[in-house]
Length: 95
Image (tube, rainbow, N blue to C red):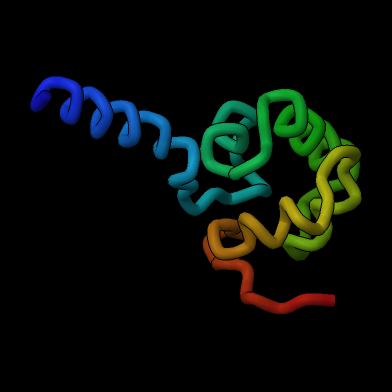
Protein backbone atom coordinates (compact mmCIF):
# COMPACT_ATOMS: atom_id res chain seq x y z
CA UNK A 1 0.00 0.00 0.00
CA UNK A 2 2.81 2.40 0.85
CA UNK A 3 4.47 1.62 -2.45
CA UNK A 4 1.32 2.46 -4.43
CA UNK A 5 1.00 5.74 -2.52
CA UNK A 6 4.64 6.60 -3.22
CA UNK A 7 4.20 5.88 -6.93
CA UNK A 8 1.08 8.06 -7.04
CA UNK A 9 2.90 10.94 -5.33
CA UNK A 10 5.88 10.64 -7.68
CA UNK A 11 3.66 10.59 -10.77
CA UNK A 12 1.77 13.64 -9.55
CA UNK A 13 5.04 15.47 -9.00
CA UNK A 14 6.38 14.56 -12.43
CA UNK A 15 3.15 15.56 -14.18
CA UNK A 16 3.08 18.94 -12.46
CA UNK A 17 6.44 20.06 -13.85
CA UNK A 18 5.00 21.47 -17.10
CA UNK A 19 2.70 23.64 -14.99
CA UNK A 20 5.68 25.32 -13.36
CA UNK A 21 6.60 28.01 -15.83
CA UNK A 22 9.39 30.38 -14.96
CA UNK A 23 10.21 33.92 -15.96
CA UNK A 24 11.44 34.09 -19.53
CA UNK A 25 12.67 37.00 -21.64
CA UNK A 26 10.66 36.70 -24.83
CA UNK A 27 13.12 39.00 -26.60
CA UNK A 28 16.21 36.86 -26.06
CA UNK A 29 15.14 33.29 -25.25
CA UNK A 30 15.64 30.56 -27.82
CA UNK A 31 12.77 28.33 -28.95
CA UNK A 32 13.63 25.50 -26.55
CA UNK A 33 13.58 27.87 -23.57
CA UNK A 34 10.30 29.46 -24.64
CA UNK A 35 8.71 26.04 -25.06
CA UNK A 36 9.94 24.92 -21.66
CA UNK A 37 8.98 28.07 -19.73
CA UNK A 38 5.69 29.19 -21.31
CA UNK A 39 2.55 27.20 -20.52
CA UNK A 40 0.67 26.16 -23.64
CA UNK A 41 3.63 26.84 -25.94
CA UNK A 42 5.33 23.87 -27.54
CA UNK A 43 8.40 23.84 -29.73
CA UNK A 44 6.41 24.66 -32.91
CA UNK A 45 4.84 27.81 -31.47
CA UNK A 46 8.10 28.75 -29.76
CA UNK A 47 9.90 28.52 -33.11
CA UNK A 48 7.27 30.81 -34.64
CA UNK A 49 7.82 33.31 -31.80
CA UNK A 50 11.57 33.37 -32.48
CA UNK A 51 11.04 33.68 -36.25
CA UNK A 52 8.57 36.54 -35.75
CA UNK A 53 10.98 38.30 -33.38
CA UNK A 54 13.85 37.90 -35.84
CA UNK A 55 11.75 39.35 -38.68
CA UNK A 56 9.94 42.15 -36.83
CA UNK A 57 12.22 43.08 -33.95
CA UNK A 58 11.76 42.91 -30.21
CA UNK A 59 8.36 42.59 -28.60
CA UNK A 60 7.38 45.81 -26.80
CA UNK A 61 4.63 44.24 -24.69
CA UNK A 62 3.47 40.75 -23.85
CA UNK A 63 0.35 41.47 -25.90
CA UNK A 64 2.55 41.70 -29.01
CA UNK A 65 2.83 37.91 -28.84
CA UNK A 66 -0.72 37.79 -30.25
CA UNK A 67 0.79 38.86 -33.58
CA UNK A 68 2.43 35.42 -33.78
CA UNK A 69 0.29 32.79 -35.51
CA UNK A 70 -1.08 30.35 -32.95
CA UNK A 71 -0.57 32.57 -29.91
CA UNK A 72 -3.82 33.92 -28.56
CA UNK A 73 -4.93 36.10 -25.69
CA UNK A 74 -5.57 33.09 -23.46
CA UNK A 75 -1.96 31.91 -23.83
CA UNK A 76 -0.68 35.40 -23.09
CA UNK A 77 -2.86 35.76 -19.99
CA UNK A 78 -1.82 32.33 -18.74
CA UNK A 79 1.83 33.40 -18.94
CA UNK A 80 1.73 37.17 -18.34
CA UNK A 81 3.33 36.99 -14.88
CA UNK A 82 6.30 35.06 -16.27
CA UNK A 83 6.94 37.13 -19.39
CA UNK A 84 9.99 39.35 -19.26
CA UNK A 85 10.80 42.08 -21.76
CA UNK A 86 14.53 42.45 -21.44
CA UNK A 87 15.34 42.62 -17.75
CA UNK A 88 11.93 43.92 -16.65
CA UNK A 89 8.81 41.94 -15.93
CA UNK A 90 5.73 42.73 -18.01
CA UNK A 91 3.29 44.64 -15.86
CA UNK A 92 -0.20 43.28 -15.59
CA UNK A 93 -1.82 45.69 -17.98
CA UNK A 94 -4.24 44.82 -20.70
CA UNK A 95 -5.11 46.63 -23.89
